[in-house]
Length: 609
Image (cartoon, rainbow, N blue to C red; front, side, top):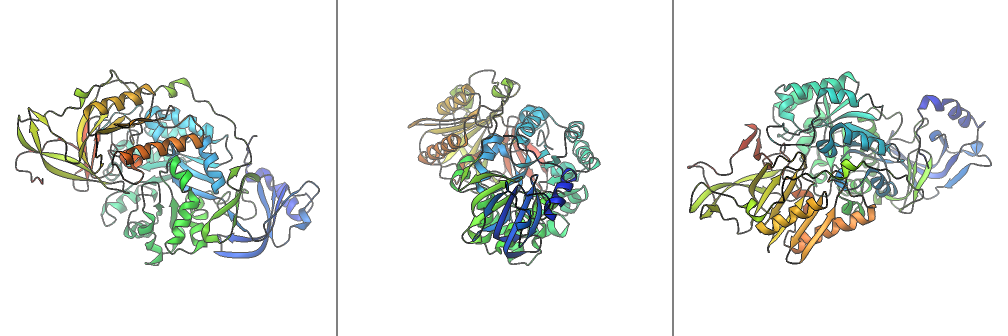
C-alpha cells in the first residue's frame, strides 16, 4: 500500500467538517488515557477522531463523527501517546535498509525520526543520500533527512572517502523537498570554530535554505570554544556525555541530545542535568544515534530509551516529551508531529499496563494501523538499489599476512609506540605510549595488544596503515574485518594474528562488504552488500547475523558490550583521542586539534610498559 502524508492546508476543509460532525471520521480512538505532552498531563477518558491521516478532534466524546464506515478502536485501560521520534539516528548503523528499519521500529512505537545518512554519503555522496531519501518516502515513517556535513569527516589529508560533499552539494540537497530538514552533525567542529571555508559555507547554505544545523562538539563543556560553535548557528548536539555537557548547551539555547545507543550509554549521566540539577527539560531530547539490528531485536528502539530514562528518575510524561514534542520543536515540525493535537498528523501509539513500562501494543502512522502486538499489520513495498551500490569494495590486490607486519626503525630492543586504548561503552579512545619489543626489525605485538589496520576500499589507491590497539581482548589467534568503519568506511581489520587478518579482509572483500570474524572456531560472516553498510536481508535475518558476530567475538575473548559497534569507530578521525585511517594515526586534542602523528615516538617521550 502507498503511504501519504498530506499537507495540513489540503486537509483543513475535511478536518473542520469532521470535527463539526458533518463528515464521518475514518478512524476514532475512544476512552483512553491521553499522554498530553503539551501540558505534561495524563487525561482520563479521552478520544481522538482522525480524517485524511490527521487528527480532527481531541475530546471526551467523538460519537458525533462516527459513521457507518468509521473504524473504532477501543482504548479503554490503555494510554494514547504520540508516536516516538528519534532525534538523531544513522539508519545505516542498524545494518538495515530503510524499509527493514521501518519494519523493525514501527511495532516498537517509533513513527518518525531525523536521519543523518553520512555513512552512505561517505561511500556514494549525494547519490547515496538521495537513494535513502527515496526509500524513506515509501515507508509509513515520518522520516526527515539530514544532509551529511562532513564528507570526509576530517578532510582529505586525514582519510580517503568514496565521495566529497561541500557547500554546493548541501545547497542542492535542500532543493529536494521539505523532508530534507537539516545539516547533519558537524563533526569537524574545529573547522567551524577556526573558520574553515568549507564548513562555514555548508552552514551558510543550510541557513539560507531556512534549515537547521546539528552539532557534534567533543571538547569539554567548559571549553571557551563551545559558544563560538553555537555562534555559527549550531542549535543541537548529541555529543553529551556528562550533565555539564547538557547544562552548558541548554544555557546557550541549544537542544541537548542524550544518547542511548547499543554501545553509547550516556543517558544515565546526562539526564541528571534535569533530575539532579533541575534544568527545564524542554530543550532535552532522547536519541539513539547508533543501534544495531541485534539490539533493536533484543532491547528495542526509542521505547527502550524512554524506558531507560524513566528508570533514571524522569517522570514518564517528561520522558515522552523528550522523545516527541521536544524533538519536533527542535526541527520546526511540531505543527505536524510530536503531539496528539487537532491538525497534527495522526502518528499515535497505544500502550498497555504501566506507562513507565512503555509497552506499545499498537502503532498508527498517518491514520493507518501499521503494527499491533509487536508485529506489522501492513506490507511495505520493496526498494531496489542499483548495481554499483552492491559492488563498492575495490581493493587493488588481495592482502596477505606480510601486509600487516610493522617495520620498526630499530633492529632489536624496545621502542616507544603509540597505542589506541578502547573504552567500553564510550565513543572516545585514549592515547597510550607503551614500550614494545622489536625483533629482526619488526614490532612484536602481543600481551593483550592487537594490530589494527585500515585499507582504502573506494578508489583502489592501495593506501594502508597499520597500528596497535589495546582493550580488544582476544585470548586466541583471531581477527575481525569490516567495511563499516566510521566514517570513511574503508576496510578496518583488527587481529592478534597476521594471517587471520588477511583472511578476514579477503572474506569481506569477496562478499562486497560486511563483517567477518575468523578464529580457530572458523569464519563467521555478516554480509552487508548495500554500500558495504547495510544488509539486503530482512530484519530478522540481519539481527541473527549481527548476533552471530557478537558471539564469535565473545568466544574469541572480546567481551566489550556490543563490541562490533565500538570497534567500528576506531577509524573515526574526528573523535578524541587517537584513531587510525588509511593515511595513518590521527590524534585529536583540544590543545592541538586534529593532526597526523607517527606510530613510533621520538626518544625521550615517556613510555609505560
